[in-house]
Image (cartoon, rainbow, N blue to C red; front, side):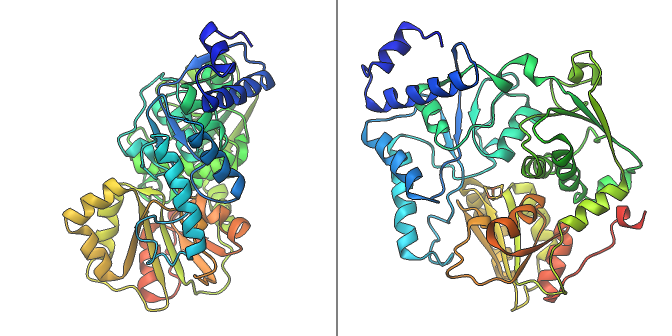
Length: 420
Ligand code: F3S
């Protein structure tokens, strides 16, 4: 790679050990992908924030001990746990210690304690065309596809290297020519009333991810007035069923106002149709629960926005969660403070909902919670639930999740695409 004089000095260690190590990692990455130079990024979102193995913790602590400090605004993805309400989340003390060490390392490097997988709804919002380096698959898909910022799917530990240097190798989705859609996905036979049921969006995203894999897809037929939280659920599902970093929603993605713009004036290599029948089959694949009982309801994956809390409290106020069911809703600290101040939190806790911040429900401590089956309004959670936690899951609308939680028995209303 061609390095500037300043970058050469960093590689020589003249700006400290952390910057030297971070740049060495980025140069290796660039050479692996054939990049010729580094480009500046204006913000970073770090995915390596939940303790899984000691290697990730030791890397962060080493960087911090070597004097590493972020050079651009840097947000943090969720921890595995609620770092403040860890007792209510039943976090074993030996696990808590590792999370606290990881927290201390990233804060020492001056990252912002956002602890959220929806940084784009928490004040850390890039703009169209901006070069950024984000980890966390749902956030990457959202930044590229809904906002039109530019990031690759950065892996754990690359992210903190990018934050310290404020640069990344110039390759992949940072370049306009690699953002061209090569496959086309068309929605067929999906009516306006079907779109009125927000549960359709994660299912469409899930199908797009399966069809696209790691290719850039263009999708037609999404209503231009789709809610931002529906698009969030779409992105999370798409990037869990496929290695999706970018898709173009024609008329929504800023650089894809027309199909010709997405395809860069060429023809798609393949064309797929999504029909109500395929949506029903996708929904069936996200339902592995046998019988009619679940003991966990998970919502807030990705983390809840204020609008989602308003929807939840409208559905649940005045009701009571059944004694056989635990109901979790996850959000970030900012939204938590708002719902605490405006009374929503009280209504939810009165109904029996447990609202957590910072954490990721997929990483709940198995040592202290012994669930048998979960229901969720997140296609991403349902998709990963069995493979990552060995827990059967059922995907359903938020209304069905609430009804299930109150009755203590699975409730599944027939959606319009199931009747087709
Ligand atoms: Fe966020 Fe964890 Fe879901 S990181 S998107 S809550 S799996």
